[in-house]
Length: 108
Length: 117
Image (cartoon, rainbow over all chains, first blue to last red):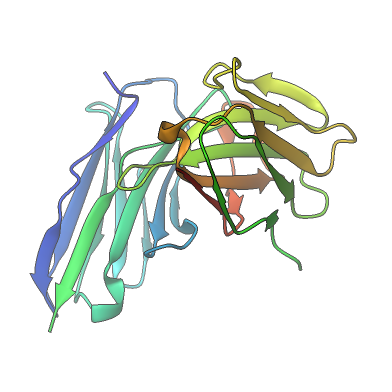
C-alpha cells in the first residue's frame, strides 16, 4: 500500500463550482500534511499546510481527519486559474511523501 | 531571497551514458532533498541530506545513482549508466524547518528534465 494515495482525476468542473479532493495516508505517526499545487511543467508550490484539524485560506479549505487518516482540500468558486495538479503530502520521518496528484480542469 | 537553483534545466542523453545534476538550496537551509518525478506521477523521494550527511537514501537505486553534498551547501545527483526509465524531472527541494515529529514547507527548484533515448 502506498503511504499517500490520491484519486488521479481528472476532475472537470465549470467555473464557480465547488470541488473537493481527498487524500489518504497510511503512516499514523505523520504530523505534518500539505497541499501543493503544480502547474504543467513547473515545480510544486505550497498551497496549504495542515498541522491540526484544518486550515482555511480564502476559497481553499483543508481538513485533517486523523481517525480515518485522510486529508481533504475544498475549493470554492473555482476559477480557470485553479486548473492544475494538486499534490497531497505527509511527513514520514522528516521526509515529505507525496501522492500521485489530482488533476483539476476548470472550464468556462 | 534567492530560491532553489538547479542546472541544467534540460538534458538529453543516450542510454548507458552518464549525467549529473546540480542543486543550490536556499541559503541557510540545512535539509536538502532530491525527488524524481516521472510524467503523470507524484514526486518520489530519492535521497535526503541534513547538512553534509545522508539521512535517508533507501529509495535511491544505488547501482546507478549517487548523490553528494560535500560541504553541506550545494548538492550533485549523478546517474551512471542511465536507463530509459530514468527519463523524468529531477527536483531538488530544501527546508529550514524540522522539528520533533514534523517538517515545514519545502521549497522546490524548477527541476532538471532528463530524456534518455
